[in-house]
Image (cartoon, rainbow, N blue to C red; front, side):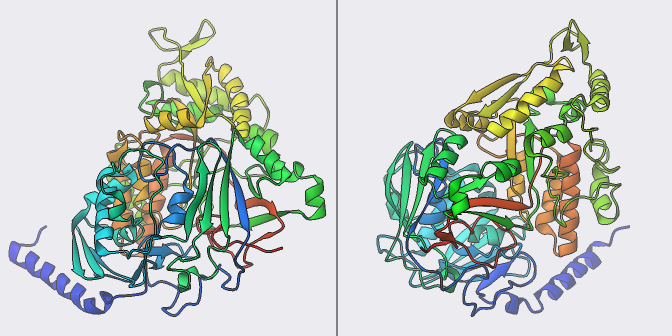
Length: 603
């Protein structure tokens, strides 16, 4: 039964009146903003909780990287640019505290304000904010940056731009951004847009890849570079923001250097030789066995384990559903059944790392594995007819008996393949027309542990009558092929936060599935997933938000898009003994904002 027109409008007006009560207080400029509730740090905070404000300045840290770079523009699809340019040379209006799920504090902007519906956001720039050439950061720079990134930058910037109704200058140092779409994360997203100097790009094709050094407002400058070999960043002694509370205890190294090598094995040897001074170890087995070297025994190299509380994310072998061979969920389930996780994990890492059981496992956001209940079921039921089996009923990854042969799971895989129209004839899996089941596994050079897993995996697939082609390409080819979705199956890793939001559209959204350079590698187009992301972005309570994430997790897992591997609840960093980090760790652990941000050098 619906309300007549007049009472309905009266009800709406009444609701608006209720929302407006207290709105001026909530719209007052603040020192920070949180996705839900209020930011944890007070206006007079001294430093971020995981930064040591007394950390010494000086020294250097040297990272090892695989591949190379051919561009210094990290905001476009073309070219390969060092990611450190974004984090070391350029700043955003607000900065993130990685000890909260999602809270931001003033950086280039001294205040932020937003309405109760978050349909607009306003910023006031700091009067002292400067680019590295000494020129002030202006409102015009901010407006130009948001528009340029949204129209000519990487696809990750496009979605938020499409939701902007207007950007207007409201004062000498202030601006307001209005939105045309309900999305409570948008004020925070805009606060995290990198701000570029408009005049620095005059007469320059922003979308063209080049080695032109851009002007930023961040704590570091490029000290030197040679494509394919190294890039060095030196701390700017005239950095405008060095005394901000947000920056105390951060940006401590005089030099941050990235050396480029052919593969991870060469990086490890360079680390042991002292050319590289920090090394993240991805293998639990190597962490136990490969560091029995004199430098570790003498204390010249320190092994640090950094715990975290973030979701597992997803890592494994993604199947490109744009390819007909992987369009059927039963085929994708068969691929998962053929991956003998228990045996592969025991062989490669002594079974020390747990398997990823869902995209948000290892956190309160992860789905429950039984039937959907409560609000989660309410959200999914309108899509029941289009959801793959398991989304509502419950889905869990298959478990093998631990033996190499994995007989039970392979038998289940054979049955599913038969249901999908595939059967073994003349020693090969074929469709009804006799065409063999063929696909390529695309790998990047230097991924030894992944290569070892693929070797075992292809042996299991051979028992199903499948002989995939394994292609190993360099970093440039790999980037080009994944950007254009020119692959059948390839390793994929997506880190996920405790406050997932608009980036989920870039990872799984239908709108970007055919957009080159987006992150939806599996090519999924799921109305249910799109609706759950919408629900996440418009939820007004923490409980409603969590239910939407759990529902999205179910849609992703039941889609069988990825053959999951393992994750770790600690990061393993081996480093020179002169490198130190604070005793208080952020909840995200070794993540963005940790190394090199709050580390320091001391003899």
